[in-house]
Length: 172
Image 1 (spheres, rainbow, N blue to C red):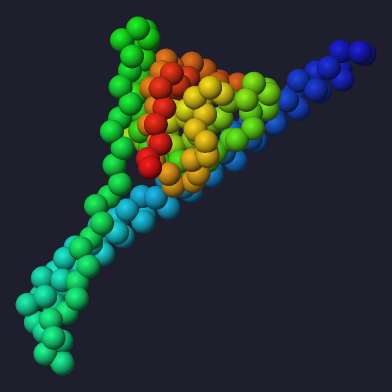
Image 2 (image 1 turned 180 degrees about the horizontal axis):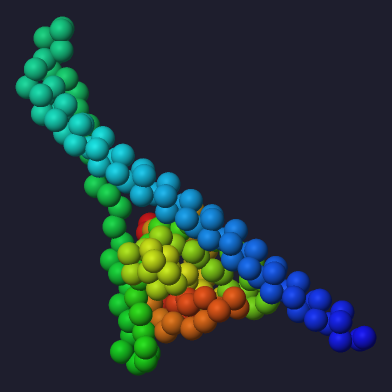
């Protein structure tokens, strides 16, 4: 009979991991949906704004003064971090932060960043960066910040693929 509680504990650990994975998946999926929706809206708005600005700048307002138009700010870009030649199996990715794990449960002081990235190292459209203590930026990037990292891909604590960062950059 002593094996029964041990089996129950193992079963609970599996169920707990599945639930955490499902919740993180929902959060990430929602973030991707929000980011993709806002990007398509901003492109549509930008096209409308461009048309409006073109027609408005040639037509003065009712007072006869030319309308003041603001130039659009270019979308933020961060050059990708290049893999060092001495790191075998190195992968580079860039993405917008969806989730930040500031305190790693194993206590080694590293930080994890779940990002929406076209490279999709962890899954379609998702890349997780595991940034060790000596490479942690201060202050830590937050949700929506653009980050780039390079390093070998290893499984994380839940079996997910993630980049074990050897070089990391944050958009300023």
